[in-house]
Image (cartoon, rainbow, N blue to C red; front, side, top):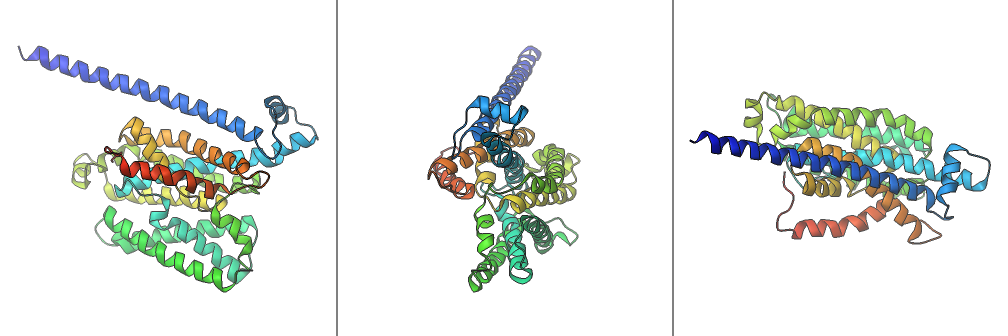
Length: 351
C-alpha cells in the first residue's frame, strides 16, 4: 500500500526537476539572445550613431569609409574585450562566492585587484612602464603572486587545508595593505602615475585586439578549470566533511579554484583594470533564477556578465555625450542600488 504513494512522490520530484531544467535551458537561451542584441547596440551607439545596415556592412563588407573605420577600429575591439573580460569577472565572482561560501564576495576580496594594481604601480614608478602590454603582464604577475601569498598566509602551506574564513581574512588583510602602499606611491609622484589613471578606474576604451589575444588564452583556461570543478563545489557547499564523504578532494578543489580565480580575475583586471561589482552582482542575480546549483550559476554568469558590462559601457558613452565615462565608474553606479536591494531582500540569495 505504501509503495504507490512513494512511487508517486518520486515521479512528482522527477517532473519538477525536469521542468526546472527546461526552464533553465530556456532562460539561458534568452540570456544569450539578449547578449547578442546588446552587442549590436554596442556597435551602433556612440559619438556617431550608426544604423544596423552600416554595422553589418562594416563587419562583412568593410571599406575605407569613416563609418566602417569606427566599427572596425573602435567599437568592435571594445565589444570583443567586454565579451572576454565580462565572463571572466562574473565567473571569478561566482567561483569566489562558492569557494568562500560568502554571498557578498567578489574578486577584490582575495586581494587580486590590489595585487594587480600594486604590480602596475611598481612598474610605472620604478621602471617608467606606460604601455598597455606592460600593464598586462605586470598586473597578471601581481595577481598571481598575491593569490599564492593569500593561500600560504591562510595556512595552505601546512598539512591541513585552509578554511574559507581563513582565505577571506588573509585576502582582505593583504589586499588592504597593498592598496595602502599603492595609494602612497601614487600620491608621491602623481605626474608619473597619470598614465595609470585610466587603467585604475577600469575602462574598455583604447584597448587593441592585440592586447586581447595576449590575455585570452589565460581566460579560456580559467573558464575551463572553473567549469571542471563546478559539481565538486556543489558538494563542498554542504561542508568539508560531507564533501569528503562523497569522494571530493577538498584541498585539490580549492587549489584549482585559486588558480582559476587568478587566471580569470587577474587576466581581466590586467587588460581592463579593476572593474568592480560585476563579480558581485551577476552571481546574485543569476542565483535568484537558477538556485544554488553551481554548474548552472557558472553557465548563466558566462552569458549575463558580458551583457551587463557592455550595457554599462554603452551608458558611459551617452550619459555625458560627447565625453565618455569609464565603464568602471558606471558599474559602481549600477552596482550600488542592486547591492542595497540585495541587503533589503527578505530571502536573499544564499549559497
